[in-house]
Amino acid sequence: MLLDISRALRAPGEEIPFQHCDEIPPQEIFGETVTFDDVLLTGFYSVADESLHIRGQLTATAHAHCAWCLRPVDYPIEVPFDETFARLTKYNRQEENPDEEERLMYEGSKVELSHLAMTLAVLELPIRFECGDDCEGQAEFPSGDEAPSTRDCQKDMPDQHPFSALQQLLTKDQEV
Image (cartoon, rainbow, N blue to C red; front, side):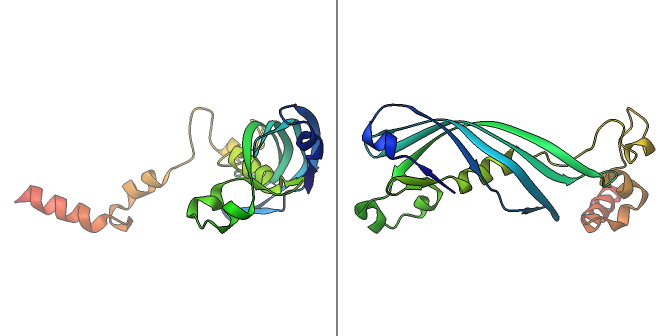
């Protein structure tokens, strides 16, 4: 969805408040589909020279499943942002620079915020979703204990890990 910045173009340097609803498509993250709703960007924007400055806060709700018990989890997202968009002109359009793909650009009197919203939301997600302290999946591990790690499994089967050949060479050298 596009944010109309024509007011700031008519009044350079003046900060204009905004509230912008957007949509983030479902994202595949570590094999799980995470969906988002109630995506809202609020804050201020201003134009100076050829740059659009937008600052504010993104709020949204991410929906996924608990890593322990697989129950649905709603994860609230609140993340501040402060970004500068460069104006796309016929001069900088002709320049072929690999870094330009990473730069935020706008053209005309409207700016696309969907990519910014998606980036902010995905970077704010936890590594794994958990439903809480009362999770049935965590009940298998008393408090203070953690789930068995890959390292614990490797202690039981030392020849089954990816570096078992190196471990055997090290052991042979020490015996000689």
